[in-house]
Structures are given as structure tokens and as C-alpha cells.
Length: 303
Image 1 (cartoon, rainbow, N blue to C red):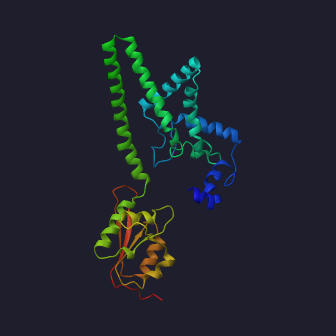
Image 2 (cartoon, helix red, strand yellow):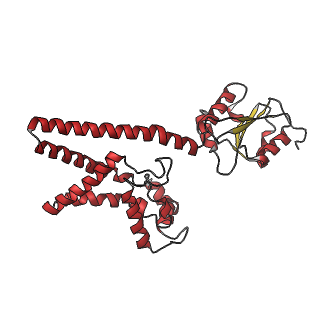
Image 3 (cartoon, rainbow, N blue to C red):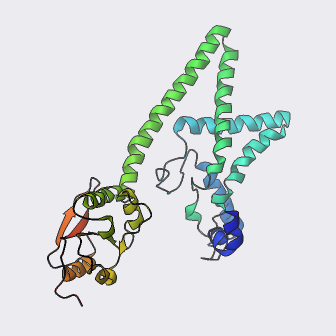
């Protein structure tokens, strides 16, 4: 990474500079005001809203569960109170390290909608969970001190076990139900399409005669190849390039977006005996079409 930064500094810093300044778009408000608003949203993300980045979180949901979120803010309060009493600099540093480690997200001044971003705020993970642990330890210590020795330890351990089980139950539902469902509906089904491509390659076709017709905001043709078991390939194809496929006499498979009428017309024109079929996906709205060309097929209209 250091070598690339030195060799291509403009490309390396483009993403950062386009977010921090007006390189790509002008700032909507004064920079200090946007930074202040971004910081507030980033600090609230643990129990309020962690942003709209669906690959890593559930849009509109907090970054922490109910139990962890409550313990986090309790931990912040406990550490700040302890700092006021003891003036121990490590307590203040622990709290301040969180907004500092969130700067890669909060400094998105030109694109404030990208904040908070769990990818960019990942550095704050360690101090956040340290504060959660301190809060839980403080609760257990308080219970042990209030109650007689044996019953205090039992009550403290019971509370810790209850909170852990409650958090596990809630997080299990969020991860394996809500997150799973929203990820399926948001991500493209390249694994399903890759499985069809692999079946074709293993039977009548070849890895060299599979193509994905390019369509705006659709699947990544490289992921189709990877899921088919052929990493490093790019199956991208556009209608104006279809003539290049004519000389190959082997069976061909073209994967097409159901809305891509231009690609369908071009394929039918070049391969009039080809078969077009719509395949139903396991996920609603993710259906796709395949255009199969038998081996030895050619077009009477080819130049």
C-alpha cells in the first residue's frame, strides 16, 4: 500500500479528498457545522441509527443491541465520573478515542449521508467494548458490595448470565433473520447465476463460452465467474461485441437481465435458433434470463 501511495498519490488520496473537501461536490454547509452534525450522528449510532450501509448492517438499526448499547452509555458515564474524581488521564483518553477513531466517517463532509458508516468507524470497536465491559463489571461489583458475600456473587453472576443470554437472543434474531432477509433482497444473486454457469460449463459448454450481458446497476460479471469456480475471469459482454462470439462453434450461454430488451434482440438476431428462458430466483425480484446457443450454431446474417 505504501508503494502504491508513493507511485499514485492522486489515485490513492482521491476517495479521501473527495469526501473531506469540495473536489467532487461543494459542501452543503460550513465545514465545522457538518463535522459537528456528523459527530453527533456517529456517537448516537450505537443505540440509534448506524446508517444505510446494508452490506454490513441493517439500515436504520443501531450498531449495538439493546443490552450492549445500554451498557456502552453507562460505561461512558461511569468512566467520566471516575475521571472527574480521580483525574486519571487514561479514563478521558478512553472516551475521547471513540470520536477520534470515528473521524474516517465523520470527515465525510461533502457526502454527509455516508455517515455513520460501520466500515469506517470500525476502529472504535475496541474502546466501545472496553466501556461495555467496564459497565458490566461495575454493575456486578455494585451488586456484590450491596449484598452479603455469597448471595452477592450469585446475584452478580446471575445478572451477567441473564444479560449475555438476552443479548445473544436479540442479536441472533437480528443477524440470522432480519439481516439475512434484507441482505438477500439487497444483494444480487451472483451465487445462483454462478451455479447455472458452472452447470453449463460442466456439461455441454465451456468456461470460455459463458457471458453476462452488461446492464446498468446489475450484477458484477466477475462475481459470476468467481461463484462459478473460475476466479480471475470477467464474463462481461455488450451487444456491440456479440459478433466476436460468432466464430466459436461451441455451445454458448448468455446471461441476460429481464429488462434488457436490446440484448435479447441482438442475441436473437445473431443466433435465431437460440433458446431464451427466464429462471426464477429464490429471492423475489432477482429473476434472470439465459440465452442458450447449441453447439455449431451460426447466424445466417453474420457478416
